[in-house]
Structures are given as C-alpha cells and as structure tokens.
Length: 331
Image 1 (cartoon, rainbow, N blue to C red):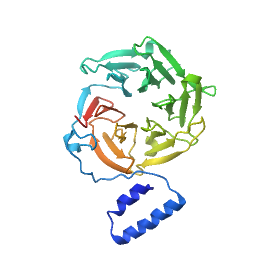
Image 2 (image 1 turned 180 degrees about the vertical axis):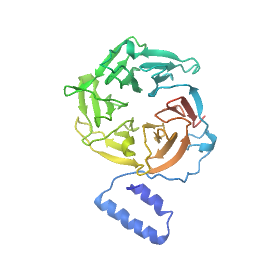
Image 3 (image 1 turned 90 degrees about the vertical axis):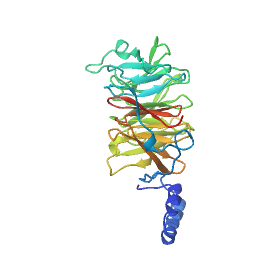
Image 4 (image 1 turned 30 degrees about the vertical axis):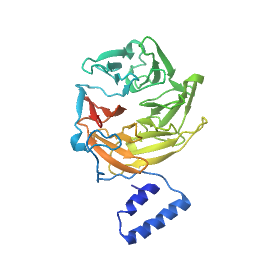
C-alpha cells in the first residue's frame, strides 16, 4: 500500500523490532501533524478465525464452500434482497428481464418483470438491467444500463417510473450500479462519463457528487450512511466519498489500492457487522476488510466471476457470468 491509516501503523509496529518501532513512531507523528490519507492494509496473513456460527468473526475459507443458487446464468447483472427475503436477479434468462427467487424455494425462479416490455429501445440500445436495490417502501430500484435510466418498480411490478435519465440536458451516457442512502438520496455510477450522479427523487433533483474524474462501477453506502464506497476497476482501487449534507461536489480518497497488481474490484457490500466485502471480478474472489482495524481479514474463492455481491442474513451472495452462488458465513 502507498498509504496507511493510523491503525495500520500501530498494527505494523507490533510486528517489528525496537529500531523499526522508533521509525514508525516518527512517521506516525509526521502524519498526525501534517494529516494523511486513510487506506486499509492488504495482507496474505489470515487472522485466526473460529468455526462457522460465530457472527462476530469470520470462518476460515477452507470450511466455507460455494453453494450454487442458480446455474447456468449467462448474463451479468446485480442482485438484491427484498425485506421479506426474496432474491432478485438482473438479466434473468435474457437481457432486460429481472428474476425473482422466493425465499420459500430458490429452486423455482420466476420472471418478476421484463423491462423490454416497458422501455423502448434507443437506436441499437435496448433495456438491460444492471444494479438493483430496494427503497424503504419496498420498491425495486433498477439501473438500466442499456438505455441509461434509473427506474423504480412497484412491489407487484404493475407500475414503472423513470426517476432520471439525463443531466443538464444530456442523456446519461452509461450507468452501472446504484446505492441508496438513509435519507433517500440515490447514487448512480457512470464509468464511461467518469461521473457519480446524486439523485433526490422527492424534489426531482439530479446532480453530480464527484469533483474528480472516477471510472466507478460498484457502489455501497457505509453503515452510518455518511460515506459512499466506490470501486474503480480500471485504476485497481476502491475510493470513498464523504457524503456532504448539502448538494455540493466532493472529492474522493483512496481506501484500498490494489495497484500495481492489476486486481480489478468491481462490487462492494457491507454486512451487519460493518465489514466490507469486495468482489474482485475475474479473480473469482471475495476479499473482506475490517475498516476499523484498517486490515484485510479474509479471502474467499467463489468459483465464478465476482461481478456483484449482496449480503443477507449471515450469507454473501455473488453473481458472476455463469452462476449465482452463496457463501454461508454463519448459521
């Protein structure tokens, strides 16, 4: 890592000899006086973990086996759980279709809605679902990457609204993922335009969050709702935006820097303990970070491209090119 936060420095200090400690104390003092950029430390050393069943600590990877939820699943797209435990899958069976797997039985998937029956094509581009999430009223929010729209769908799929499809008179160039803040603000990533849109549906506001150029794909809101976590695969890093209360621009700071390894983080998700899970695309891997400690704490192989990731009741669900799998992290 190029930058470490103060917790990282203390962790490293305990693993060094006395001479190194004095050097680190000097560096700590320098950062305290002059400020520093926070960044978690990646490591190949796993912290000791208990067996499956303790939610406070994660189980070791050797006892966590990927379970196939649905396969084959040939199209990329997001995953989302409704409040009642149903799993929704973007581009189910065909591009633009959203599938629903009832909590009673994951073995009988059904089509929740076909966006191509609601959204007209624009030239050669037709509806294609990407990011998914639910709002506090149980409505499904969908990023339509094909025609560049943010959609809202009623719980029974009998009403579809276009919440946003343009900014400053120009149609969205591309949209990939979304995240919703506790106050209802919706953030939508647009990697081709280097933009993160901030949308406030109740007042019809569409603006831009980022003051810097970022090619963001995946988005997640921190548990306290104050930070937006954004994956930038082209730059092999994960960045953070401290979300301003006012509708103003903000700059990012680097949370995890995978360069020069070439690792491409594509998706992000928090669990109910505040741990951050990163889906590392075609590396077929999930990496877990404790942001309070500033450390990578675990790695899990998922046997598929880790394009999208969602947490639900002790398990991580991962969507890739050919399947959707589940990692049970606690009973």
